[in-house]
Length: 160
Image 1 (cartoon, helix red, strand yellow):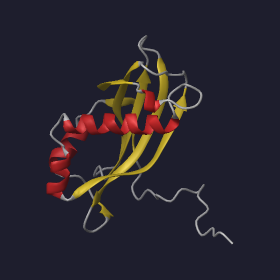
Image 2 (cartoon, one colour; image 1 turned 45 degrees about the vertical axis):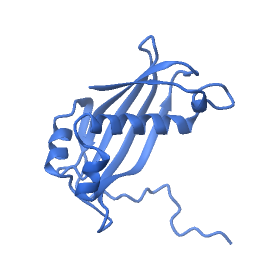
Image 3 (cartoon, rainbow, N blue to C red; image 1 turned 60 degrees about the horizontal axis):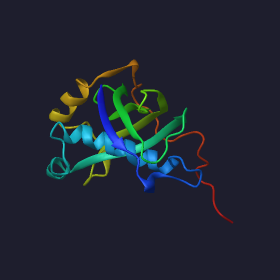
């Protein structure tokens, strides 16, 4: 399991004096990028191969408050993937200084060819990394032909 230690900054706090929802998005995005960078998948690598990660959705479950000045540990495990790894889910847990679970999150994303603007399977180096990433206990394979349009979204809705 990949673990990233992070400090909660003043700018991460909301009006209730705990970590803001939007800060968790940034903290876990940083965790994912740190994981990739620690294995040589850098911004330069993305540029050289003309692709990048594209997030479809993220889900958060808040369990315990986290406050300014706290040192947290954010984990990353592979939760799900399709056969060619063009679509994957990472599971994240955020733990406080007592190693208590504070937040659970799932990030569903894929890899986009920046010229064609279409989903692609990642290059072999990244595919191998993801394949060897620690799997969550409840890891599963995504069904082929998964539909990315969420049934909750009112597509076609217009402001009149």
